[in-house]
Structures are given as C-alpha cells and as structure tokens.
Image (tube, rainbow, N blue to C red; front, side):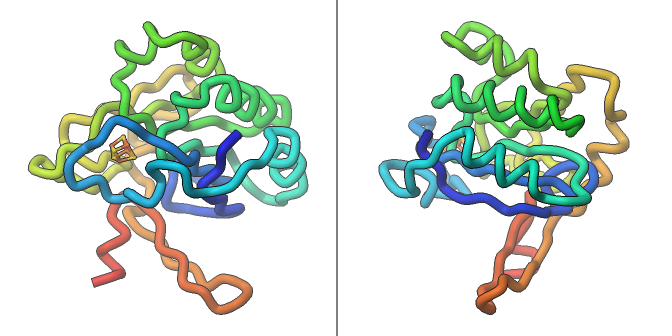
Length: 182
Ligand code: SF4
C-alpha cells in the first residue's frame, strides 16, 4: 500500500487515543484541501502487515483511524487494516471524501464499510468550513455504523493536537490544526 504517514497516538482523530494512518493519494480534488501533500505520488510503500505489527505493539490505544489522502482509493489495504485492528479489540473510524452512498457502489468498498464503527464522509467544502466535532465542513456527516460510540463520543474529539516528536519536530493534527499553527 502507499502510505503518507502514521501517528501512533493521537487524541484529535476520534474518540480516545488512536493510531492514525494517512493514506497517500487522492484524486477527488476538493478546492482548498487542507492536506494537499497527500495527493499524487509522494509518501512511501509499506505493507499492511508492517502497519499491523506496529499497531499491535502500540500500548494503551483505543482504536485505529484511517485518513488521507483517500483510504477508499486503496480499499483492499483499508479493509485489511481495519480487520486487523478489530482482531486486536480496537475500535475503527475512517475519514473519506466519498459519501457513504458513493462508497457503497465502489468495488471492494463494502468490505471496508463492514469493518467500521464510524465513518466521516463527504468532500471538504472550504466555503462551508466547520472544523469541529471531526467534521471539516458542514456538509460532511458522521455515520455510526455500530453501537460502539455515540454521536456525543465522536463530537467530543478535540479539534487540534500538537505533539513534539522524538527529534524535536512539531506535529499538528486534528480537524482544525491551524488553531495552533496561526
Ligand atoms: S477528499 Fe480529502 S484529501 Fe482528497 S482532496 Fe478532498 S479534502 Fe483533500
């Protein structure tokens, strides 16, 4: 699979502490996309097995979050990662630029949806910026696909997080990282 980045423990990408995988590649082209470096051929190749080994070795996390880029443009890898997370007892959440109705019609994607507790769907619309409760813009929707979380659980996610990496790098994540970056 083509990977943009991982963050082993984030509190700004869904309920609780979560391992986050950003997929590389997205062709949806939302004007004003907040993560354009995830488009195209950047990132690096890795394997689902390598990511699941890292996930299993990460202590005290509640779940796995897939983001991007566009996870549903690599559906086999997305489904395998989510299934692996569930086998570890972790919850699963995914951000996608596709609506859930579009997603259900894409090859290989129903298998992804079957492994999810929560999906945040829809293109980012910069003119309708929202940036709270895990929704980047107001058109996006939170789908609770199991009973694992309530809407309040999901909406309570902090909008931004700042972390200092081992080599001193500053890592900003969350639905409104510019809250800290300005
Ligand atoms: S779907 Fe996400 S990554 Fe893709 S262009 Fe839209 S905002 Fe950017």
